[in-house]
Length: 417
Image (cartoon, rainbow, N blue to C red; front, side, top):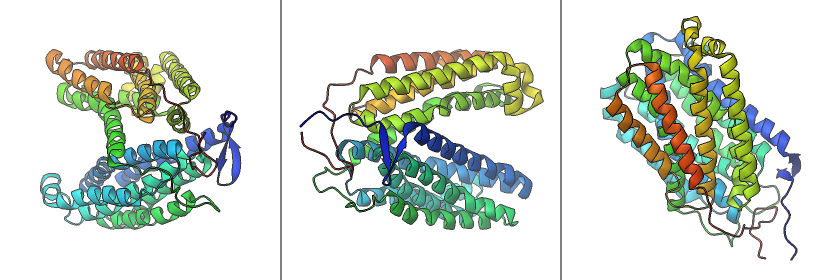
């Protein structure tokens, strides 16, 4: 058999599309996801009283935390699908969804007492969380099968289901509980639709010869996802503990720039992941180049227009902090590169792939607890140093083991060579 050439065009539901169109579609879907997530608190601030607004923000935060295993599941399914083809992960997905939802229900007494939430709210959040986790499996299959246009449609659909009901409820004048009921109902409708979207037309739903996705693979994906979130948000949490209220508020505005530099180039990692799982080193090089180039552009732009960046992020009261904008952007840009390397390690099946990120987060906390910076630039330098060292360690440990890439046919089934 002649060597299999890397496909230059991806199949998406029976039609071919270039990576440019796929990248644009995934980018637009990401903008929609973030836009709807931002719209909910903005709208709630105008429709609910302060207590209701705080409760809704807390509820959304709980769903985000409880849904982290879903992000790990998507990562694990995408890698497994790209490497081995489709396999039946229904039972494992159902167990993860039940575990995430059950944890919220079991924690109802604690959440009601500690966070002053209505007693019915944790159950409603459990429904939304279960829907998000169940949907993550199908998004992983679409990503691993390089069906990126359908992946973008699935991301948009999940965002509409997750936030659309809440938005509709708020627009109709509903209170906190009624808005969350609408959100739970709309979210529950998404998994069956995504199941149809992820099904390849005219192809079997599973490949008998493919090995099954294991719980260990999902745990590895969850660990990587959680490490990403912890290390990138640790400085923001430390700011609330170490800085005075005005300083922590200013730092929170600055982290908007960090998160923008972090997530703006993530489409490169999304597109590259299936090929990384097949041992394509060129895809890693391209993803790193795109991510690094995007980060460099954002750092340069924030250097030239730092005051404007802070004004847009926090208003005119924060314009004077513009000189720190390049440093905040650099933190996000460094972690964006580290996350591409992390995805590459997970795709290669490396054990403890996220260890440098966990060590980096622990180091940031330890240094901050020792130095105890009381100013924005003081904490900012600690966070930037941590990001730089962590990314360098990830780069040094990024020598992936030699492994022959797994060839799969157009249906996603493995081919013997």
